[in-house]
Structure formats: C-alpha cells, structure tokens
Amino acid sequence: MKYKLLLLDVDGVLVKSKEVQISDKVIHAISKVKNQLKIALCTGRTRRDLQQILDVLDINNSYHVIESGAKILNPQGVEENIKALTPKNVNWIVTTAGGTPQGYSFCVNGIWVEDLNKIADGQITTVSLHSLTQKQTKKILEAIKPIFSKYHVAVASHWQIPNGNFILITHPEASKGLAVKYVQKKLGIAKEQTLAVGDMPNDIPLFATSGFKVAMGNADEKLKLAADYVAPSIEDDGVADVINKYCF
Figure 1 (cartoon, rainbow, N blue to C red):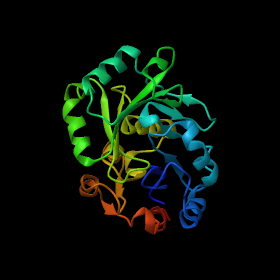
Figure 2 (figure 1 turned 180 degrees about the vertical axis):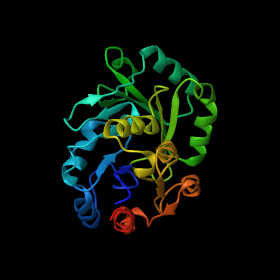
Figure 3 (figure 1 turned 135 degrees about the horizontal axis):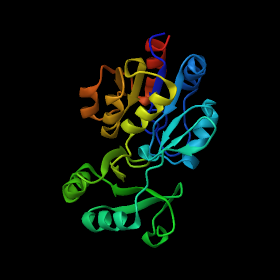
C-alpha cells in the first residue's frame, strides 16, 4: 500500500450537516482500511461535536485534528499541541470585523458560545464569523484583512446553509496543515505517504501536507483546481470511491 495516512475533512466530506449522516457505503469502505492505514479526521469541530462520528466509524484510537488545528486529539483521547487565543486577541478580531458578520461564536473550553462575556476565564481556540451568502463572505474577508498577518484565517462550509460560510480565526500557529505535520511527525509518516480529502478552501493547508490531494465533487472550485483528483460528491459517496481507488 502506497499511502499510510488518510486525512479526511468532516463537513462536506463525511457528513452534510451537523448531525451524523454518514452513508453505509462510506462506513463500510473505512472499516475495510482502518486497520491497514492511519485515518485522521481534520475538522473545525470540537471533540464533543466529533465524538459521535468517531464512534460510528470506530476510529477513536487515532490522532485527529480538531478546532481547525488549534488542538490535536491523540489516540488515548487526550488533547495536545493546544494553540489558544487571549481575550484581548478575540476583542480585537471582533472589533475589526465590526458589523459585517451575520453573527459570532467562540470556541471556549471545547464548547461553542455566542456571548463574548463568557470567554474571559476559558481557553479560547477559535473565533467564528458567520456568513449566510457568498457576497457576505467576501465582505467579511475584506473587513478583516488586517487580521490576516497576525492570525490564521480559514473559510469553512456552513453546517446548515448551502451558500453560507464560517470564517474561522485561530492562533497563527493553528491550522489544519501545521497540525497534520505534527501528527505525521508523531507517526513517522511522510508527506508522500499521505492522502487528503477536502471540500473547502480551509483544506488547502491540508493539501500542502499530502502527496495526493482529493477534492470532493461538491468542493469549492479553488480546491478542485489544487487537487490531483476530483472524487464524486458526498451524495455519491465520494470518500468510498477514493478509498476503493487509492487505499488498496
């Protein structure tokens, strides 16, 4: 087998909404290879939001990148390599974004909250700016240009709104790509032995760590251009197609 590490984004790749809706075909394909290679989920979700998916796929005993790379969940279920923001950082981000987002949420101690007053005593890993349309996403990105040089900014798919986005802002050393490099070092697996599957621009750092890059059929056009292969969409069990083609 050429590949030893399979990286899978979650939303838009394994599931279409916040709920667990993984197809039987994808579950079966993962079950066939999970003992032959390492599978790491790479997501903006918290451990709590991800746990049911880990249980369904039976891949708890692996490394997983969570909270957009701000944390790594190790095979023993312990969070490590944590990169946090300060309340001062968060206040500056919110002030810079102003009224352009539809709303805000903050990942504090592994839980999403919407009240800025609740972040003071917690470990803050992510600020999420909510967008309902692509036009609004562009407006938000324009407003937060001063943030780009100081923090990591990623555009992710919205769990419930097809044309919406979550703009995720994390510590400058927190990204899917940097987190995957940490996992690769832990496992002794090279870039050339890694295959990544994604659907949104925030998966471009993931692609940078991988020898073979796959975009889903439902993926953002920018990601498709960066991919070595465009798989069928999530509706057509694209992950199963990738596993059957490249992981045996």
